[in-house]
Image 1: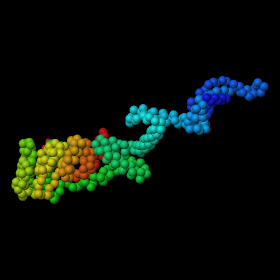
Image 2: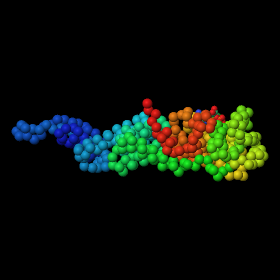
Image 3: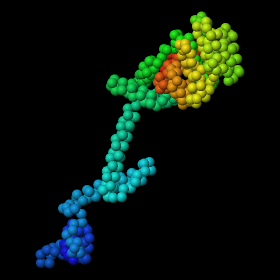
Image 4: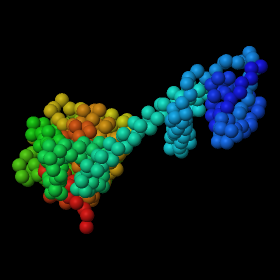
Length: 400
Ligand SMILES: Nc1nc2c(ncn2[C@@H]2O[C@H](COP(=O)(O)OP(=O)(O)O)[C@@H](O)[C@H]2O)c(=O)[nH]1
Ligand SMILES: [Mg+2]
């Protein structure tokens, strides 16, 4: 056993010394108050005598890597460790945090704490960046954002638009007025849509197929367009219909055919097509009506597609109603695009005040918009798709 005597001002001082000299396994055998120094029994200082001991085979083994103890450094290290531990505990116990495994070994634990602190720091930086960006959004941009969300424009397009306006604002070096923000929005949207517009239905093709879900307005639209072609342009138009699922469907088109004095051929299968085309041989323009089906099913898409085969120049127009759900419209568009459909026609604009789906569909599927129908009246309620008037509708505020 090795015994050592320490004279110190206070016990904690002795503990530090004992630990560094005798190691962590040393034990304190005795402590007592003593008085040292002074002069003739006066002015003696109060001290503490501490007797510590360690088993001899353990003597001189330092508790930790030997270092010179410095109370200030110790205190600082202790504080850092406590902070790190608190942080780690907070992170581990935070309800929103992803599940974490408590590491077992101290080196793992240190690494874990360091990683957590780094993550925390990155998160703080990200948060402050987001706050700066949100702060950079003027009340006009915030209103525009809200308006476009109400219009069901996809978030990715809204974000792109807002970013473009903010970039222009930065370039200009000052915050845009309300009018400026909305003007820039209009011109940016126009710029994006312009490449897809102005196509209408080609003059070069003789056969135009109309496809789309049940009840979107295919037959009505055909009647509207045929009226325009016969009455306005004096064209010789013919009709074919393959919508034989409902008796009323054929009758509906026959009624329009009679009014417009346009011949109508009914086909029940692909095999009837050559005969129908032969009957309509001297017609300059042929509109083909098809049955509306659940075109979210690709099987129905391929089925209708098999009826659209002709040896002649033709094109197919996908008819979509604005009363449909945005997600369903996207699914239908997705299927028809796989079959090479490039043109789209939107109906029932009169029945909605939400127009974002048109933008999403054109941009996401690179569909070429042809016409917009906005009512049941044949032949008036249809007009060519025009980017400017569409953007005006999209941006028009519905606020009371
Ligand atoms: N409000 C409104 N109704 C329409 C429009 N186009 C067609 N419709 C109506 O929608 C219903 C279905 O039209 P129809 O042409 O038979 O659809 P189809 O099944 O696709 O051939 C009819 O009552 C039409 O009058 C439109 O643009 N606006
Ligand atoms: Mg129909």
